[in-house]
Image: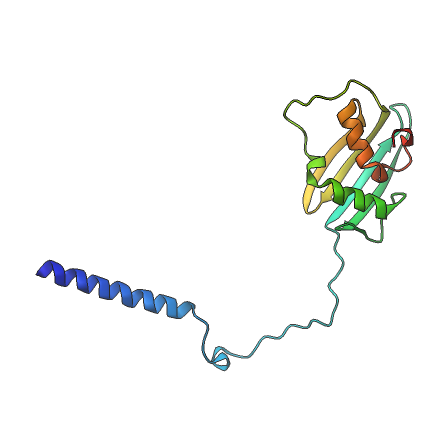
Length: 162
């Protein structure tokens, strides 16, 4: 009997505690009781922040001078301040490629043994909010495919592979 009473008392106390806890989380039935209403202005446009901001250093061959350009995108749309030759196409190419193009492949791949040329492009910065740092080249068929995918980002260098 004592055991049954103790269980009922415990259940009653737990139920009351739960009700109090849930009541504290609920929204008040009278919004005025919770203080003045917060208002947010929707008239001001949000500042344009580039979710992609890259620096691209391209080199035609190891003996040549490199050239540096920048690209700023919001999704597939180019933002002002970009200096690549065609920012719109470069942003669209990046949007189509996705983040995986900046990942280093750790699993073996079957790639054709061919060379697309000595060109290199080092891309650093932020792509869709993630830091990137990758050098692209054309040392085999897989690398050539990546180069072609991102060709608008690299500009006219190595245009024979497009």
